[in-house]
Length: 160
Image (cartoon, rainbow, N blue to C red; front, side, top):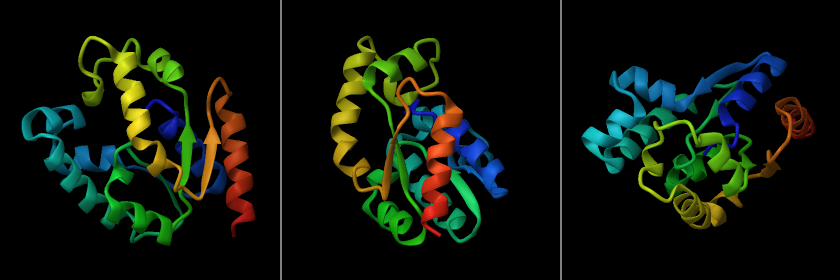
């Protein structure tokens, strides 16, 4: 969350001349609702089921950079699909930076409540082991987007 997935993925796709896909946007378009509304109206389990279907559909295509919501890899089947059929890169960001980047935004369904930093730390702790299974981990803390994109571009080019 707030690691820079969308902006980094969009710029990376442009540099690779590949298609950019934001999985949350795919879901919002197909469902006619925002991610926040899906969470509120149907619950997280329903959102995750929809996310799983959307990911399977998107992964059937090639030459694309996919920006995933941070919870997409929590499903073991999604994680395996990504690891076996793509190059999975996790963007690492500290809870402090996540809090700073999300402080003026209220649309994060998993950050509702009074103590947002504590919630961010809880989510990070719960997901750390799963995120560590990515092929590569790139730190985005206090780094310009173009530096992050250039590092990932080197990884992609060396993995071909």
